[in-house]
Length: 350
Ligand SMILES: Cc1cc2nc3c(=O)[nH]c(=O)nc-3n(C[C@H](O)[C@H](O)[C@H](O)COP(=O)(O)O)c2cc1C
Image (cartoon, rainbow, N blue to C red; front, top):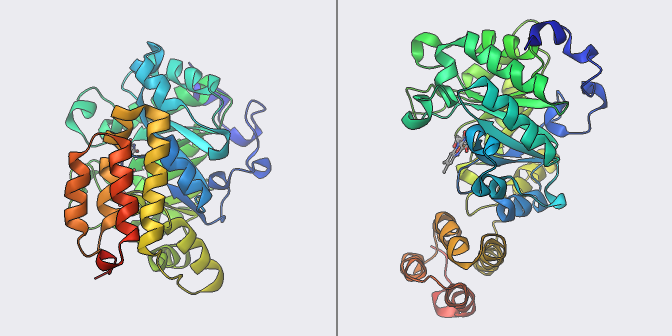
């Protein structure tokens, strides 16, 4: 596969939509997009729809194994499934073999997403040991071949999500960004930690400004890592010049964060937080959608990651959460959630 010949000038390549004509916010420099991060067992179709409704400009599926995709596994097909209302949507793929990544990009394309995203950031050992995820940060040649292979496999825009480097001694994010741009990658999201950091310490936002000032870098840069408030988003847009912000953990149980950021960016004021009743109703809606999408057993399990934040800061919330966790039928959980919001005695936020 000779991606270098085809993609020396990616914008001129007729196979791909020119950047200027793309209406996908994440592909536009300066667009200040607000994006839902790919999260395994969290960013499923019901949650993505909620986040889009509340202002997320782009959403991604969780990472999907290229090996599973080319085997046509049922689980990977389920992970790829999405509703039209979620667009623009990216399918994220990962893997350590070029052939599998090439095939997986084609399988993803057949599902008609708006983008294909490559995961070059996952720090988990069992992924890295197969040369997937952040493993490429140790071998930029491999990253270049892998990204080029995916770009060559599909006419869809290809984006990348990665980390700053493998460890503090290998932070070559400018080089990475220029290399990815040269093979035709259309936008780069950086979780501002190294692989060695895992989730420890703080995300190093200072690298976003450094990256945005890279001579010759034209593709959008999306900031990720520890963005939890509208003020954080504004700081990143205004002080570092990034083209988008991507939120992961802060959106779990709080899909309103996208609306809050949008409002703050437009009017400079913070919206009041959702009421307890709104939180319970949204949580109940998500549970119903989760069960409709995954079936009752798995739909109830998938919601377990979300309750904590929906209930956070509510008096008696801990007790409610413990009760919910014990239930495995949707109706029982709905009853707890909706009765809770109807009982004035325990509706007091701390
Ligand atoms: C539960 C969970 C699952 C994740 N799964 C993925 C994934 O499938 N693909 C990916 O690129 N990153 C994944 N991540 C990383 C997030 O996308 C994001 O980079 C990271 O959480 C930092 O952003 P945050 O501080 O906004 O959460 C995951 C993170 C969490 C917490």
